[in-house]
Length: 367
Image 1 (cartoon, rainbow, N blue to C red):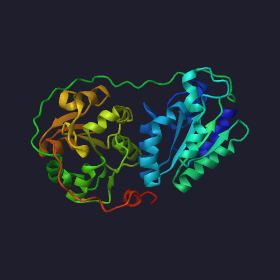
Image 2 (cartoon, rainbow, N blue to C red):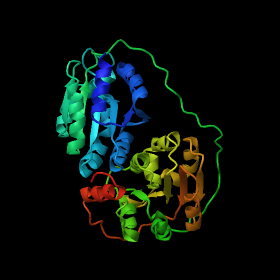
Image 3 (cartoon, one colour):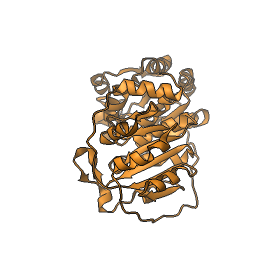
Image 4 (cartoon, rainbow, N blue to C red):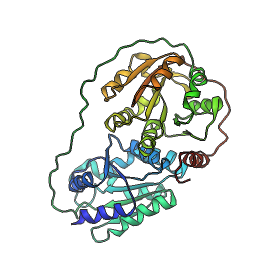
């Protein structure tokens, strides 16, 4: 069976986690993946780039299976995260849009897949049913060379389909919380007062000024400073938390969470007790001029976290309250209410690869 050959090649690459979005053409393959690997059900392809990066930083290996139509959702993250930090990203792409495709919306991107991959400088292979070794080869090269690699899966080669019943995750007993808090401190002032609580923890920090402020407050080799890929900080932290027993902190922000809210769905589903999300909400896009975000107009990030399945949510505006919440059982979502405003701090004097290598070394993974 072709699907078994694909699974053997994935296993040959020592992959521990398979992340995917569904595709009707390969649903039998996905059903078998569920039986053989730890699987992570994505809501958007881009968040998978962050999670696989975090898994690798923590010393474990992930692979993503997607449709070609979803590849366009990943391009910025591939450039600003995977390529910038020199990280692996093995992709199996169900190649829609060609070979008698009947859905018009699949055709524009599917017909351009090879051109897109070449434009990004991504090495790829084509699996036509007779050459399963191309999958193992690309997976191995992705990790060895720390670069993204892709295999396009032709749609006309699969075993006749079979429907699979996927287990549904359900978290009962969630109650909406409505605690109020008034901002007392800026983000920098809050970081100054709580950064000692980060000692010994792996900290993944949001891009731009938040990372620069954290570096200024107190640099640590266990800090992973993001320089791009807005919206993926919690996805990266989620991957790190899956790959290590160490406590992990995501310093996220209101603008970032609103860009990728589905990142909040996975931590409670995976019951990541070692993960804390600090949702630093100053009601503004601080790195681009303090333009207001939708939280300024009433969007409630704590309520969003509750709706995503977090049983442990907090709304705090004082350092004492934040530290107290961080010591509760996780996964923890802490909505930190802040004043707008940035501290004038210097650039981080580290390259992306230097940030990656020292972070991985401190976690005890390959660097």
